Length: 110
Image 1 (spheres, rainbow, N blue to C red):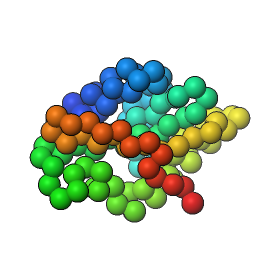
Image 2: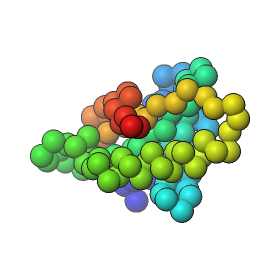
Image 3: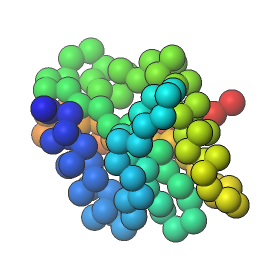
Image 4: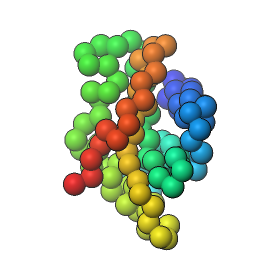
């Protein structure tokens, strides 16, 4: 599907930016994280969003609060498998048609 192509494009894009891909479609009972990457010591959880046409607000606006909380919970489960805890952040890669936007640190874990 379109989602897979978007994820592949996002994965190639971050690799080109010098990030190291750690996992794709990492799942637990809370949810799924599209891409997990490392930027130096920082672990990055990346949500990939794609829209075939940019309607209202485009792909970025489609990350609801409930989805953000689910991502954060899923990330916390992933982090339980790692010691010591790395610094981490949440990014989103939004693909609207041919346009790709990388939103760094766009979701804040309270």
